[in-house]
Length: 321
Image (cartoon, rainbow, N blue to C red):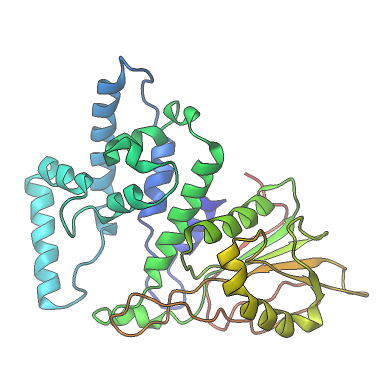
């Protein structure tokens, strides 16, 4: 499901530049690599991983972070980095994965500083990357792997929606990415995604701009009281006021607002996981916690829609895979 979300959110829409993902594609690619497993095969497997990772990085060179925006200095830095990658690809790659030099390899440093799968036990990024590959991953806790993938996905959204004063285009993003999940049930991936989103937000304490609207035939098992959909605005205000406390306590269901459609309106509860927003921020700021929005309209039998002009991606029917 995250792979499909990545594909849909990467499409250019509403005249704005497409969202660029750097952490999630790397984690997903590593999970599809197969290396020889065992102590005797460790050296050959690591060498094969280095070759594949360098080739993969070369194919995605166009997705490298822009330095300095459109200024003359930024353009000069981009040209210099491009020349270094072409002239000394092996040296530049080694510098990047080491995570020791500013500008180079920021995504690799992120993996070594995030909290899932105890990355510091691997000492280097290459050691950590090896643990994500098929075979080697069998010794890892599956829930930790799932949370790492989701955390990487949310980190890409955070960076895409972070406003920088030297990149005026960032200020054009004034709406939230919205995910609509239909047919959610406790035995399918839709509920798993909503549950993991709640847990990752609680455990990392990080903000993200993703708004998830989940439509289900029954209430979620998480301890969140359902409110009639006509009381949606009131329910949101109460949730926003209580969020700082329940977030500190890391309560299950902290990020869930459950709305119930009563009477003749299909009778389907609607679970809304509002975003923990990074933008807008002060020009040049690091990003602050801003009030999540309430969607601008609700229809009977529908989840609430995104603010005008927002990105929207839907997973119709019963989510699988």
